Amino acid sequence: MSTRTALTVPRLRRLDPLGALLAAAGAVAAVFLPFVVLKSNRIVPGDPRALLEVLPAWGALGCQVILICAALAALRVSNPRVRLGAALLGVVAVALAVAAAGDALTPAGNKVVRVSPGAGFWVLLVCLGLMATDATTRMRPGPGLRVLLLAVSIAVAGLALAHGTFDHLSVMREYAVNADRFAREARQHVWLALGSLAAAVLVALPTGILCHRVPRLRSGVLGTLNVIQTIPAIALFGILMAPLGALAAAVPLAAALGIRGIGAAPAAVALFLYSLLPIAANTVAGLKRVPRAAVEAARGMGMTSWQILTGIELILALPVILTGIRIVLVQNIGMVTVAALIGGGGLGTFVFQGIGQTAIDLVLLGAIPIVTLAFSAAVVLDALAEVLDRARQ
Image (tube, rainbow, N blue to C red; front, top):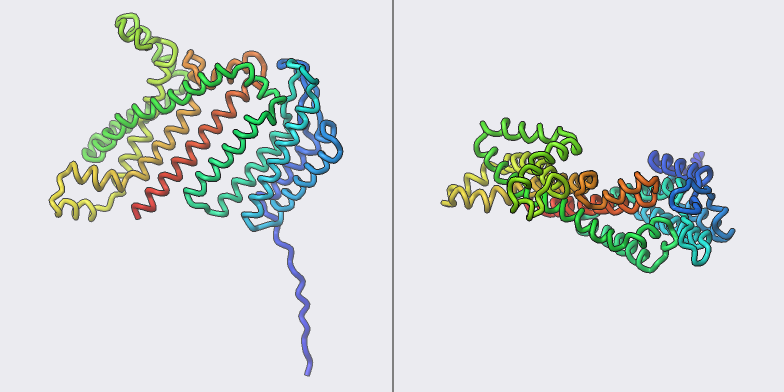
């Protein structure tokens, strides 16, 4: 009797394609790109420095070990929780390394020297962020957990900034100089984005309901709104300057209310016009999704048309309508940036001022909060739409 012995050799798991790409990009950034840039002032080009040049040997070695572990997790590990943990640990290591570099390179009491994160830092941060996002997607967290993760991330970043961990970095130096103005422009940015959205909801929601109830109006109304959507933002701002300026000159009350050819008024009107199409179109799409049987059952129970609309149709269509509102809010947060060109204020003021002064750190002071606001709005409204969609089912 012969016994066949089979030797089983464990097969190596195939490399994760996204992980391989991120690991390769991160390795190139860590080896060939500067980790920080030391500048004698905020405008001059500066002197690039590698990670090994700005940290003690033990600190640079520890950061490299963590990054290598994150790369191995991206390449070989399939467990999304392990991948997420490795990515977040890498983000913390890179953030602490750039903060330590700022502390090490800034002379005591010197307010002129600038230490800016270099290309290597930004590439590593983007790679680790994409890895964390991919791991979170693979975990398929519920809407509540997604919002909680966002809140924790923002809270940790806020505490680190408030603690002064990054005070010697150039972006925080710019913030220290512009702290009062930053708060004012941030409020203006949020006000323009949310105010134009609220006005658009009040107009676009009834418009969408009307287009649903009277189909012959649909193509004309949505087609007109689509034409407005195709006009470039800066062109629409310019188009609105002349009539609003004439209105301010002819009606003193309008000028007293702040309606002028430049400033927040043309920006708010333009954002309002851009917001109409996504909300109206999604209202039509959401109402079309309402089951006919539900409407007929409600009518059979003696409900009036208004009761059916408010109690049945709009409730069932709300997830789709919220998707349109999410698109508009994210769009508006980004487009308010351009409003700074016509005196509308907002965080775009720092972006364009930094471009004019060739001060990239001032650009980042405006750009980073804009990206954070847009991303946060998208996550929160996506979660809310998902909750309502589940309740609908």
